[in-house]
Length: 302
Image (tube, rainbow, N blue to C red):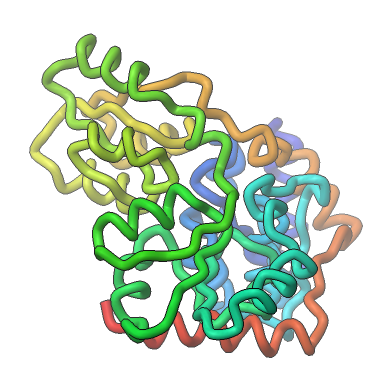
Protein backbone atom coordinates (compact mmCIF):
# COMPACT_ATOMS: atom_id res chain seq x y z
CA UNK A 1 0.00 0.00 0.00
CA UNK A 2 2.82 2.43 0.88
CA UNK A 3 4.32 1.82 -2.55
CA UNK A 4 1.15 2.98 -4.29
CA UNK A 5 0.68 5.98 -2.00
CA UNK A 6 4.22 7.20 -2.74
CA UNK A 7 3.79 6.58 -6.46
CA UNK A 8 0.47 8.46 -6.54
CA UNK A 9 2.05 11.44 -4.79
CA UNK A 10 4.90 11.49 -7.33
CA UNK A 11 2.68 11.08 -10.38
CA UNK A 12 0.17 13.62 -9.13
CA UNK A 13 2.90 16.23 -8.97
CA UNK A 14 4.31 15.28 -12.38
CA UNK A 15 0.89 15.40 -14.04
CA UNK A 16 -0.32 18.51 -12.19
CA UNK A 17 -3.30 16.45 -11.11
CA UNK A 18 -6.01 16.83 -8.49
CA UNK A 19 -7.64 13.78 -6.93
CA UNK A 20 -11.33 13.78 -6.05
CA UNK A 21 -12.98 11.19 -3.79
CA UNK A 22 -16.64 10.69 -3.13
CA UNK A 23 -17.65 10.09 0.47
CA UNK A 24 -18.63 6.50 -0.36
CA UNK A 25 -15.14 5.57 -1.59
CA UNK A 26 -12.88 3.25 0.44
CA UNK A 27 -11.13 5.00 3.33
CA UNK A 28 -7.65 4.69 1.79
CA UNK A 29 -8.89 6.49 -1.34
CA UNK A 30 -10.38 9.31 0.72
CA UNK A 31 -7.04 9.66 2.50
CA UNK A 32 -5.01 10.27 -0.69
CA UNK A 33 -7.61 12.66 -2.20
CA UNK A 34 -7.23 16.42 -2.38
CA UNK A 35 -10.98 16.86 -2.01
CA UNK A 36 -13.59 14.56 -0.47
CA UNK A 37 -17.30 15.23 -0.80
CA UNK A 38 -20.47 14.88 -2.86
CA UNK A 39 -20.31 14.58 -6.64
CA UNK A 40 -21.28 18.10 -7.74
CA UNK A 41 -19.26 19.80 -5.03
CA UNK A 42 -16.19 17.82 -6.04
CA UNK A 43 -16.55 18.83 -9.68
CA UNK A 44 -16.95 22.47 -8.69
CA UNK A 45 -13.85 22.37 -6.48
CA UNK A 46 -11.78 20.78 -9.23
CA UNK A 47 -12.92 23.41 -11.74
CA UNK A 48 -11.54 26.14 -9.48
CA UNK A 49 -8.04 24.64 -9.35
CA UNK A 50 -5.21 25.18 -11.81
CA UNK A 51 -4.75 21.42 -12.17
CA UNK A 52 -4.40 20.07 -15.70
CA UNK A 53 -5.69 16.62 -14.76
CA UNK A 54 -8.63 15.47 -12.63
CA UNK A 55 -8.70 11.95 -11.20
CA UNK A 56 -12.34 11.29 -10.33
CA UNK A 57 -12.61 8.52 -7.74
CA UNK A 58 -16.26 7.65 -7.88
CA UNK A 59 -18.57 6.45 -10.63
CA UNK A 60 -18.84 7.45 -14.29
CA UNK A 61 -21.52 10.14 -14.03
CA UNK A 62 -19.35 11.93 -11.46
CA UNK A 63 -16.40 11.95 -13.84
CA UNK A 64 -18.71 13.24 -16.56
CA UNK A 65 -19.81 16.10 -14.30
CA UNK A 66 -16.17 16.98 -13.70
CA UNK A 67 -15.62 17.01 -17.46
CA UNK A 68 -18.71 19.17 -18.01
CA UNK A 69 -17.44 21.81 -15.59
CA UNK A 70 -13.76 21.54 -16.63
CA UNK A 71 -13.71 21.03 -20.42
CA UNK A 72 -10.11 22.27 -20.56
CA UNK A 73 -8.88 19.58 -18.16
CA UNK A 74 -8.17 15.89 -18.70
CA UNK A 75 -10.57 13.80 -16.60
CA UNK A 76 -9.50 10.30 -15.61
CA UNK A 77 -11.46 7.55 -13.86
CA UNK A 78 -9.58 4.72 -12.13
CA UNK A 79 -12.13 2.06 -13.13
CA UNK A 80 -14.24 2.67 -16.23
CA UNK A 81 -16.60 -0.12 -15.11
CA UNK A 82 -17.63 1.85 -12.01
CA UNK A 83 -21.16 2.83 -12.92
CA UNK A 84 -24.33 3.88 -11.16
CA UNK A 85 -27.30 1.55 -11.63
CA UNK A 86 -29.72 4.38 -10.82
CA UNK A 87 -28.18 6.67 -13.43
CA UNK A 88 -28.50 3.85 -15.96
CA UNK A 89 -32.24 3.57 -15.26
CA UNK A 90 -32.89 6.60 -17.48
CA UNK A 91 -31.35 6.77 -20.94
CA UNK A 92 -31.38 9.49 -23.58
CA UNK A 93 -33.64 7.36 -25.76
CA UNK A 94 -36.23 6.62 -23.08
CA UNK A 95 -36.23 10.22 -21.84
CA UNK A 96 -36.75 11.62 -25.35
CA UNK A 97 -39.75 9.33 -25.75
CA UNK A 98 -41.22 10.42 -22.41
CA UNK A 99 -40.71 14.10 -23.27
CA UNK A 100 -42.69 13.56 -26.48
CA UNK A 101 -45.55 12.22 -24.33
CA UNK A 102 -45.29 15.21 -21.96
CA UNK A 103 -44.37 18.20 -24.17
CA UNK A 104 -45.38 20.79 -21.54
CA UNK A 105 -43.51 19.24 -18.63
CA UNK A 106 -40.50 20.78 -16.93
CA UNK A 107 -37.91 18.02 -16.75
CA UNK A 108 -35.92 17.94 -13.51
CA UNK A 109 -32.99 15.56 -13.23
CA UNK A 110 -31.13 14.45 -10.15
CA UNK A 111 -27.38 15.00 -10.59
CA UNK A 112 -27.02 11.20 -10.45
CA UNK A 113 -27.59 11.02 -14.21
CA UNK A 114 -25.42 10.78 -17.30
CA UNK A 115 -24.26 13.86 -19.18
CA UNK A 116 -26.53 12.91 -22.08
CA UNK A 117 -29.58 12.83 -19.84
CA UNK A 118 -28.67 16.15 -18.21
CA UNK A 119 -28.46 17.67 -21.69
CA UNK A 120 -32.12 16.77 -22.27
CA UNK A 121 -33.36 18.22 -18.97
CA UNK A 122 -34.41 21.74 -18.01
CA UNK A 123 -32.86 21.88 -14.58
CA UNK A 124 -30.86 19.63 -12.26
CA UNK A 125 -30.98 19.17 -8.51
CA UNK A 126 -28.93 17.59 -5.75
CA UNK A 127 -30.28 15.79 -2.71
CA UNK A 128 -29.48 18.93 -0.72
CA UNK A 129 -31.21 21.50 -2.94
CA UNK A 130 -34.01 19.45 -4.52
CA UNK A 131 -36.69 21.10 -2.37
CA UNK A 132 -35.55 24.60 -3.32
CA UNK A 133 -35.39 23.66 -7.00
CA UNK A 134 -38.92 22.24 -7.03
CA UNK A 135 -40.32 25.26 -5.15
CA UNK A 136 -38.71 27.57 -7.72
CA UNK A 137 -40.63 26.09 -10.67
CA UNK A 138 -43.83 27.59 -12.16
CA UNK A 139 -46.93 26.20 -10.46
CA UNK A 140 -48.86 25.89 -13.72
CA UNK A 141 -46.44 23.45 -15.36
CA UNK A 142 -46.26 19.68 -14.82
CA UNK A 143 -42.94 18.33 -13.55
CA UNK A 144 -41.21 15.18 -14.72
CA UNK A 145 -38.63 14.10 -12.14
CA UNK A 146 -35.88 11.65 -13.14
CA UNK A 147 -34.63 9.12 -12.20
CA UNK A 148 -35.05 8.64 -8.42
CA UNK A 149 -38.69 8.06 -7.50
CA UNK A 150 -37.88 8.01 -3.79
CA UNK A 151 -36.17 11.38 -3.77
CA UNK A 152 -38.94 12.75 -5.98
CA UNK A 153 -41.71 11.38 -3.75
CA UNK A 154 -40.04 12.69 -0.61
CA UNK A 155 -39.64 16.17 -2.09
CA UNK A 156 -43.22 16.06 -3.37
CA UNK A 157 -44.40 15.28 0.15
CA UNK A 158 -42.43 18.23 1.55
CA UNK A 159 -43.46 20.76 -1.08
CA UNK A 160 -46.99 19.57 -1.83
CA UNK A 161 -46.06 19.68 -5.51
CA UNK A 162 -47.29 16.76 -7.57
CA UNK A 163 -44.72 15.30 -9.93
CA UNK A 164 -44.53 12.61 -12.56
CA UNK A 165 -41.87 10.27 -11.19
CA UNK A 166 -39.50 8.11 -13.20
CA UNK A 167 -39.37 4.50 -12.07
CA UNK A 168 -35.79 4.53 -10.84
CA UNK A 169 -34.01 4.32 -7.50
CA UNK A 170 -30.73 3.74 -5.71
CA UNK A 171 -30.88 0.09 -4.72
CA UNK A 172 -28.60 0.72 -1.73
CA UNK A 173 -31.07 3.17 -0.19
CA UNK A 174 -34.23 1.61 -1.60
CA UNK A 175 -33.55 -1.72 0.13
CA UNK A 176 -33.32 -0.23 3.62
CA UNK A 177 -36.46 -1.39 5.45
CA UNK A 178 -38.52 0.15 8.27
CA UNK A 179 -37.90 -3.00 10.33
CA UNK A 180 -34.14 -2.46 10.11
CA UNK A 181 -34.49 1.12 11.29
CA UNK A 182 -36.82 0.27 14.17
CA UNK A 183 -34.51 -2.57 15.23
CA UNK A 184 -31.58 -0.17 15.30
CA UNK A 185 -33.63 2.36 17.26
CA UNK A 186 -34.51 -0.31 19.82
CA UNK A 187 -30.84 -1.23 20.19
CA UNK A 188 -29.73 2.41 20.53
CA UNK A 189 -32.73 4.33 21.88
CA UNK A 190 -30.65 7.44 22.63
CA UNK A 191 -29.40 7.70 19.04
CA UNK A 192 -30.59 10.22 16.46
CA UNK A 193 -31.60 8.65 13.16
CA UNK A 194 -30.14 10.32 10.07
CA UNK A 195 -31.03 9.01 6.62
CA UNK A 196 -30.52 9.96 3.00
CA UNK A 197 -33.48 11.34 0.98
CA UNK A 198 -33.03 8.51 -1.54
CA UNK A 199 -34.61 6.22 1.06
CA UNK A 200 -38.25 5.11 0.98
CA UNK A 201 -40.84 7.54 2.39
CA UNK A 202 -41.52 5.01 5.18
CA UNK A 203 -37.87 5.37 6.23
CA UNK A 204 -38.05 9.17 6.07
CA UNK A 205 -40.99 9.06 8.48
CA UNK A 206 -38.83 7.23 11.04
CA UNK A 207 -35.87 9.60 10.80
CA UNK A 208 -34.95 12.51 13.03
CA UNK A 209 -33.03 14.21 10.23
CA UNK A 210 -32.93 13.72 6.46
CA UNK A 211 -29.94 15.08 4.56
CA UNK A 212 -27.28 14.57 1.92
CA UNK A 213 -24.05 12.80 2.82
CA UNK A 214 -22.23 16.10 3.30
CA UNK A 215 -25.14 17.29 5.43
CA UNK A 216 -24.87 14.20 7.63
CA UNK A 217 -21.25 14.96 8.43
CA UNK A 218 -21.95 18.61 9.18
CA UNK A 219 -24.89 17.75 11.42
CA UNK A 220 -22.92 15.15 13.36
CA UNK A 221 -20.11 17.66 13.85
CA UNK A 222 -22.41 20.47 15.01
CA UNK A 223 -24.84 18.37 17.06
CA UNK A 224 -24.60 18.01 20.83
CA UNK A 225 -25.76 14.41 20.42
CA UNK A 226 -23.14 11.67 20.73
CA UNK A 227 -24.84 8.64 19.18
CA UNK A 228 -26.29 8.34 15.68
CA UNK A 229 -27.98 5.73 13.52
CA UNK A 230 -27.01 6.23 9.88
CA UNK A 231 -29.07 5.24 6.86
CA UNK A 232 -26.77 5.58 3.87
CA UNK A 233 -23.79 3.86 2.20
CA UNK A 234 -21.22 2.69 4.71
CA UNK A 235 -18.31 4.57 3.14
CA UNK A 236 -19.49 7.63 5.05
CA UNK A 237 -18.22 6.09 8.28
CA UNK A 238 -14.64 7.06 7.44
CA UNK A 239 -15.25 10.84 7.24
CA UNK A 240 -17.71 10.70 10.15
CA UNK A 241 -15.09 9.19 12.45
CA UNK A 242 -12.47 11.65 11.24
CA UNK A 243 -14.78 14.59 11.95
CA UNK A 244 -16.21 13.21 15.22
CA UNK A 245 -13.78 10.65 16.70
CA UNK A 246 -15.49 10.67 20.09
CA UNK A 247 -19.00 10.03 18.78
CA UNK A 248 -20.72 6.72 18.03
CA UNK A 249 -22.17 5.81 14.64
CA UNK A 250 -24.31 2.74 14.02
CA UNK A 251 -25.72 1.74 10.64
CA UNK A 252 -29.37 0.86 10.24
CA UNK A 253 -28.13 -1.87 7.90
CA UNK A 254 -24.60 -3.15 7.38
CA UNK A 255 -25.60 -4.26 3.89
CA UNK A 256 -25.60 -0.69 2.54
CA UNK A 257 -22.46 -1.09 0.43
CA UNK A 258 -22.16 0.16 -3.16
CA UNK A 259 -19.93 -2.28 -4.99
CA UNK A 260 -19.33 0.21 -7.81
CA UNK A 261 -17.96 2.76 -5.35
CA UNK A 262 -15.64 0.12 -3.97
CA UNK A 263 -14.06 -0.66 -7.35
CA UNK A 264 -11.49 2.10 -6.90
CA UNK A 265 -8.18 0.95 -5.43
CA UNK A 266 -4.83 2.62 -4.77
CA UNK A 267 -3.29 0.50 -7.50
CA UNK A 268 -5.89 1.69 -10.02
CA UNK A 269 -5.35 5.34 -9.06
CA UNK A 270 -1.61 4.84 -9.58
CA UNK A 271 -2.18 3.14 -12.93
CA UNK A 272 -4.59 5.77 -14.23
CA UNK A 273 -2.07 8.52 -13.48
CA UNK A 274 0.70 6.49 -15.08
CA UNK A 275 -1.23 5.62 -18.25
CA UNK A 276 -3.38 8.78 -18.43
CA UNK A 277 -6.31 6.49 -19.22
CA UNK A 278 -9.14 5.67 -19.13
CA UNK A 279 -10.40 9.18 -19.85
CA UNK A 280 -13.89 10.61 -19.67
CA UNK A 281 -14.75 13.13 -22.38
CA UNK A 282 -18.16 14.74 -22.88
CA UNK A 283 -18.90 15.81 -26.47
CA UNK A 284 -19.23 19.57 -26.85
CA UNK A 285 -22.87 19.55 -28.02
CA UNK A 286 -23.90 17.48 -25.00
CA UNK A 287 -21.73 19.50 -22.66
CA UNK A 288 -23.30 22.83 -23.67
CA UNK A 289 -26.81 21.63 -22.88
CA UNK A 290 -25.73 19.88 -19.70
CA UNK A 291 -24.06 23.09 -18.50
CA UNK A 292 -27.32 24.97 -19.11
CA UNK A 293 -29.16 22.38 -17.00
CA UNK A 294 -26.66 22.75 -14.14
CA UNK A 295 -26.53 26.55 -14.42
CA UNK A 296 -30.32 26.72 -14.07
CA UNK A 297 -30.00 24.81 -10.82
CA UNK A 298 -27.19 27.01 -9.50
CA UNK A 299 -29.30 30.10 -10.20
CA UNK A 300 -31.95 28.93 -7.70
CA UNK A 301 -31.74 30.80 -4.40
CA UNK A 302 -31.41 28.53 -1.38
